Image 1 (cartoon, rainbow, N blue to C red):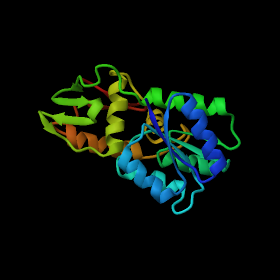
Image 2: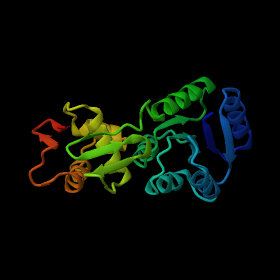
Image 3: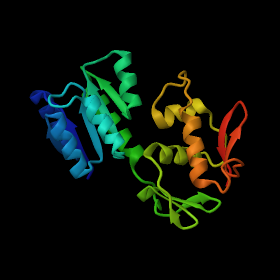
Image 4: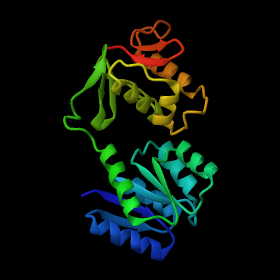
Amino acid sequence: MSRILVLEDNADLAYGLRNNLEIEGYEVDVVEDGARGLEHARASSPDLVILDLMLPGMDGFRVLRNLRDEGLRMPVLVLTARGEEADKVRGLRLGADDYVTKPFGVLELLARVEALLRRSAPPEDSDAPEGFGDVEVIRASRLVRRAGTPVLLTPKEYDLLVALLGRRGAVVSRSQLLAEVWGYSAEVFSRTVDTHVAELRRKLEPDPTSPRHILTVRKAGYRLAR
């Protein structure tokens, strides 16, 4: 049974969300205050968080930033009355996985919840290591080892590595990586990808100045060679 944490200060809406989610078979906790909701997320590690942006105590943006800065990777569905594009972009950049603008349809919300939980579920045999060269990646525990020694990666470095690994040697563009790892739109230009690739090379390549595995494809992007 998947556990969902709802951070919502509107009592009627929170009741409706709990009722509909429990009918679908989810275990649901509701917290109406941002700071207490953050503490609850830290302590219980729910499978998904439904997060209102306008919360007392600590707003949803700050809750989201703290979750991601602390390495908590559960999917977050932002639920907000704010429909402005800038708020949506800010939420995605802070690490939200999806958003629904109030008022919303219950069936749409349930479909998005199901999709996020399905995408975040570890694949079968997820304990089996993947890798390249002398690097092993174990997705179930988010563990990376080089020559048997654990390597400390930041959450975004790890997500970038997994995105490259999942392409199985195919080229992936910077814009695709920005969208997949950071939630940026494809039109946004950023040196963020290049900076994180440089850090991955420093930590995982035998010679970062002459990489064997994390390769640049000129005018196209990057690819991972095993």
